[in-house]
Length: 471
Image 1 (cartoon, rainbow, N blue to C red):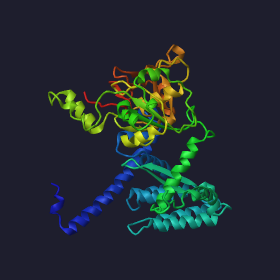
Image 2: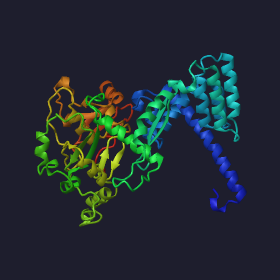
Image 3: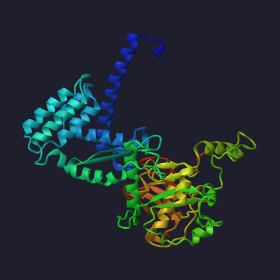
């Protein structure tokens, strides 16, 4: 029987924590070894993904970046058994292994083979045991790269340039960059005139923003100018712009804040008459939703709980009040939920592109008959599917294509009820495997796996679908 933690002595607490940490190291090594075999032995059709990283993300609590790192380690350590041995015996952390593996796979070009082997051995020794410090390992790698690397000094080596962008759990974006001197000079030059302290209009109130806050504001201003430019490249058939999906009833308050012509009384008519000649220089489009279900709202939040509190309707109401229905607040394709107030602020400053939604959060059929998906249909599909609809994938909408469920060559129309958003891999998978997709009675895509994946071929709902999923 396991002793409760509160019953352990101080010595036992320390010993148990150290033992558990060692077991975690060994389990991580075991997972890497398993993924290595999955990578070579399990087919893509069985996985349902291009490789083990997507499968790991969809079946575990691992983030995409963590899953990708595990797969990279699994593939790389096959070629460097000395690194694998240190990880498998639990004497070196996975993070240090990844650092040394990167060096081993891309060593300085002028470092001879015997030098590479000796350097790798020394790095493994430096990374072994609790005394190992990442800073020492990085410093040694940097010295080797500077001594045996290419002719460019580090400050001018563009091959080292990196920019990381990751969303946080609270919906913010964290950036981390490493640039060569020329790119850094361009960025600082662009930021400089926008980061000067700006006193208030009365001339007396000083600018109390910190330097970091001024740089962040300046960076946002540069992005605004770029998105407003007519010279930017296209992506997915149209110029990049910000899309915001929001329910119509959450936007009705805008009539008291802006031009009443922005929102008409008959959005269905407006959607039917909307042309595709949106100004490409407009940086923001708003996709609106006429779903009549109550959002979390002070004067309507309790309406779903009238009647039998144990009824399915009450369950659905409780679900919506807590989690929303996928469109009950503003929604950004890349960053996710956005508050109503910020959504309304955006809507006051931009053109509204109406995508009328039914009570299930599904865009109404736009009745297009073109061979390819139009820009407006792509926005409607994004509002419904939120990205690649394949279960467990969810790649952003900008990386997807419109797939004809009933193939165009066989007479299938380019209509909303015959389209689904898929990333390139899953688009090919649907065309070249026994996976199937159909639009169900809820007007959302459902996917049927082949018998080799599920002998019972139970349909699976699409990824990140709008609306609650309570029976």
